[in-house]
Image (cartoon, rainbow, N blue to C red):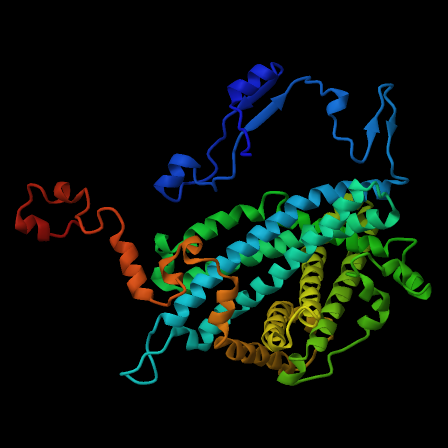
Amino acid sequence: MAPITLSPLVLGAMLPSAAFGERAKAQEPCDKLQEDLHDGSPPFLLHRFAMFNKVRIPRQNLLDQSGNVTSEGTYNTPFKDVRQRLGASLGSLSSGRISIISISVVNLKLAVSIAIRFSATRCQFGPTDKEEIPVLEYPLQQWRLLPYLAAAYALDHFSKTLFLDLMEVQRARLRGDHSDRQAELGREIHALASAGKPLASWTAQRGIQECREACGGHGYLAMNRLGNLRDDNDPNCTYEGDNNVLLQQTSNYLLSLLEPPLQVTEVCAQGGAHFTSPLKTLDFLEAYPGILGQKFMGSSKADWLDSAALLAAYRWLVCYLLRESHQRYCQEKKSRGSDFEARNNSQVYGCRPLALAFMELTVLQRFQEHIHSSSVPSSLRTVLGQLSTLYGLWCLSQHMALLYRGGYISGEQTGRAMEDAILTLCVQLKDDAVALVDVIAPSDFVLGSPIGKADGELYKNLWAAILQQSGVLERASWWPEFTANKSVADRLKSQL
């Protein structure tokens, strides 16, 4: 059944003590269609407001999944403590954010499909004057696009598995399961969703823009859809929580592990029991002190291509940022005496990169575990492993300064070897890129991009789409006015 949208006048008549208004203009329209229909916003965004003045909600209409108020005014809840109730409440917030992760991944997959198919068929320049090669053969084009293809695969798997984790919480809630494990599971999913949405929407934002630029002028042509994909994805960075604010939810979750009485040294002395989590995303922290003492011992490209070494580097990075963020928070709180100011002053260069690194590690680890599971045919593990390693190295390379600063890597050759490993993976994946796109791309009709059609007939499809546009072979409507009553000399005379 389609949702019913009530106008402000109808709502006002139903609730006289409330005021409702039409939406305000959100941004400049991208084209006439959006101007007529949506004020430049995606069609699923409605900009309306509601103001309530002493409107009483009947008790039987209150949302009471995690707590209730009796007719005598007494509050009761099935949860034993505040942490359990909080975990149950946070589970409800996660569903919207997990949905946005999926939407962002879909946008990224569409953009990557268009750009890689275009790059595989668009020929330009070559080793000789008589030969032109596809632009995907150029290492620069591979480096620009293939990491986003790897990201699409990794984030797609993560979004699907996180959704299944959320369904486990919902099913348990319907069964009336209010155990400690369910409460902790709700908190863990909340932390993953709060950092997953920023990672997915920002990756899609950068990826779509890169795909648009990688297609040159064809990418800017409206009919090829990359501009619309960029506009559609943009709100994902804001609704259900601004990305930078949401990351604080995840960093707070991680920092809470180090708060008394759960000090790391004490926890490890007790066997690390406090660092286990229902989804096992925190289990590696049982070795927290030992991980901080590790260093990357390799110096070659082959050392970075080892998936185990890549995960070890990410675990060290998360532990390092966790320690640095906690120390900064404690120093700020000691000097200022305010928990509010201490948390705010610990975000930049501390809690924010901590949440992102933790999320990247989680996505990478889940993808690698999936690749080595029995559900994946052995014939696919090589190419999927290359995608996983490329995604991990590409993300990790953005933290290179932290790896050097913390002493995990040293020497010029180590950083250069990581870059060589990324370029090697791009070359290895280049020939399989179109096939990998064919797996994730929808039908040509759904993709809706002439330059991204599966048949590879780039110019034939583009020309056919141009000819289908209304009035494309006619002069512009303003042409008669521009040329009327002007002598030949006047037309040729510069107006500057």
